[in-house]
Length: 300
Image (cartoon, rainbow, N blue to C red; front, side, top):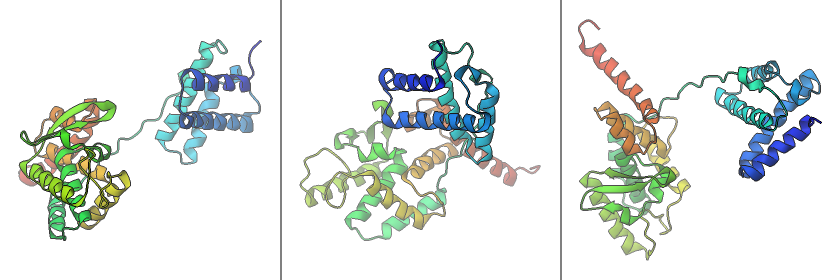
C-alpha cells in the first residue's frame, strides 16, 4: 500500500536525522522548504498525493517564489531540497520518476569582490600611523597589516599561533578550511611589527597560551572584536559600504592580480581548493587593462 504524502515526508526526515545525521539547523531548513511547498500545493491545487506531484506544480511554486522577490540563490536551495526529497522517494520506490528531472535551476550572477583601491590603502596606513599607541590602535595596526599582507580569513588570523610564524624565513604557516595547510611569505616589515607586538604583549600581560593576537584585556581575540576594529578604520579611510575584514582579503588578491601575479599563485596564497574561486579576481584585472587600453591606445 503506497504511503501518504505525510508519511513520505516523515520518512524522509527520519532518514536525514538518523541516517544522514544532519544538524538541527539543516533539518529545520529542509522542513521549512518542504512545508512551504506542500502548503502551496494545498492552497493552489488542493490536497495532492505524492505520485500526483508533477514538474508543472513545482515550476508554479518556483515562479510564485520569484514573483515574491526571492533571490535565485534561495530558490536554488529550495530546488536542492526537493531534489533530495524526490530522490529519496525514488529510492524507496514510492514514485517511478522524479518530477525534478524537468526542473531547471535559475542561474546565479556572480558577485564581484569588493576591494579597497591602492590609493585608499595608503590613506589607511597613514591614518593608523597618526594614532596614539593605545592597545586598540596597536591591535588595529596588526590586524589590518596582516590581513592585507597575507589575505588570511578572519578565523585564520584570530586563531594564529606564535609558533606558526617563521621569523627567519619571513613566512607564516596558516591552517585553513578543512585544516588545510599553506605557507604565506610576508615582508620583513610585517615580521618586525609582529616581533614588536609580541614584546609589548609580554610586558603588559601574563599570557601562557600560544596565541598571537589578544584583546586589550589580554584575552584571545574574538571575531566581533576584530571586526569592529577593522570596520572603524575602513570607514575612515574608504568610501566602501561594506567594511568587513574580508574586504582586506579581497583587496590582497585584487592588488596582486592587478600587479601581474600568477592566478595559480594567488589561489595557493588564498587557500582556495579550486581555481574557479580565484578567477573572480581576474575581472578587476581585465577592467584595469581596459582602462589602460582606453587611455593609452591611439585607436581606443
